[in-house]
Image (cartoon, rainbow, N blue to C red; front, side, top):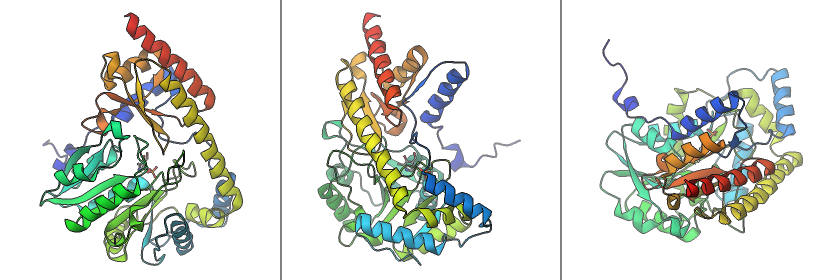
Length: 396
Ligand SMILES: Cc1ncc(COP(=O)(O)O)c(C=O)c1O
């Protein structure tokens, strides 16, 4: 048989994160106690309120198709939350779309706006899906490396140097996975000016907007004057509400852009699970739900302190201080190993699972990504193993 795989699908790369996660789970299955510094998800259970009201929604037969846009009541709640969190007004009728995960929201947004041959600028390090979705749409991923010495802060000058007549979109992830950078208002304003001057769209992935620390302020790019009409905001419930397995997300954008995305969404998942949406309608605004989120935030704040203190004390590696999300990029080049070799050796010899950052940006070969979405005990144990591993490298 001929090779039937489409050219676009053939361009996709396997995720480096998957490879490590698969090996880590094989080690776990063989009885090894593996420290999970690789996970991109909170280790907490979903808040009780959300679980209870979703079970109620199932019992009450919310089991039929919902509107393609999502339940109106959920869109109204999200509109209120977006207004409170970002000061941007989105009309719940026409400017919010509920999707089956942030991943679907990204997929729908990129497939809606990227033509074959379009260039899409992605400041890196960045979440691995963006470049692959751009390839799936037939577009060209333009890697714009940000500087570790600036904490991987957004840099409009670097971005401008990569703009060409073929540039269609800039993808920003704020706060950033994997760097933990929280983009400051001034940098966002400068990038916004570029978007207007060169007539570009901005896909703003704000999945971690609630997870900021140390006085950092999350600013939604859509809140800057005149920007809403060219910003597609993608977000979801996975990280803030520890709902990674539920698969629910959303898009908020100007009505004209949203009506185009809606068509792609209709032909991908049609609508998102109705009982989950109803469960969220009944639980999202309850004080108990907010309390559960705040408890998680307090835990992440404490864990961030523990991991940074531990990493700073280890000779031979350099963490880049994160202000948001729950990841730290760590430069391991002083050990003489690439990030990829370091991550593999660390997993095999010390059973600590991290992510080699090379798949997250062309200039990230010296880095690993550590996730501190792990228990305090696992963080402490992981730091000990990391330190011993580096000492063993020096002796070898
Ligand atoms: C930056 C970012 N965006 C989007 C997603 C997708 O989230 P989900 O599909 O679980 O809603 C993730 C998940 O890791 C992420 O890190």
